[in-house]
Image 1 (cartoon, rainbow, N blue to C red):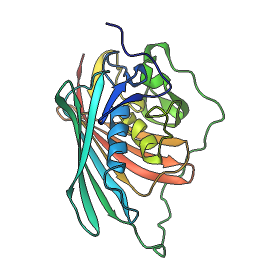
Image 2: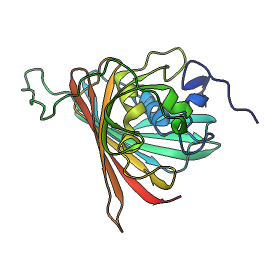
Image 3: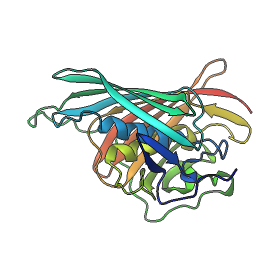
Image 4: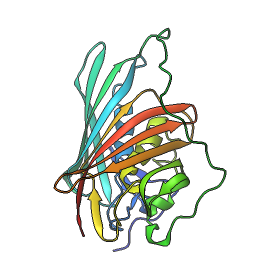
Length: 262
């Protein structure tokens, strides 16, 4: 059967917390399966909309990818699992075809006072390149084409650490401007992709989870993803990322990797 028509968004709302995934969500492993970035951003959007409070800020979110996410209709939900005056725990779920495919837990904490001293970042923010780099033919998935990539160093087909500035070409949800959190979550799951050590045509290095710790709320359209992967024989892989907006670092991400031959 033909897939859903492409729109100017990753997801098209259908009411009752249901969303139709467009081909912009399809990942590099299989055209009928989503890259985990758009579903993570959709869950993050639902968390933002769940009993929001101006005095709290999202500080950590962990996604457990229970099953591959199809390019199909999804249902997303979230609830405050542990309310509190200074900290709150949010639980969220994404379902496809009646089965939970991604679960998430997020902590909100009370915002630090305005007079709190800012810690100087121990990180040199890479410059934003002036031109976009073309995506290699073997990486022409819907998701990768739906993101503007401006590499600073390394890349999807170059083994080792890599950094790239990114910008969404389309809204996450049709008719909406993405928030800073949604922009970060849409690319955070690509840390293992841009910094892979193995040829993805011969190897799997797939993450069953993604954990993101946030320093502050991101601003602007541009998000820099700076990532490095490590792995050892007989162990698991690990991809670590620093994400920044044009003002500086905003989040740190970690991905556990299953490594194996295709």
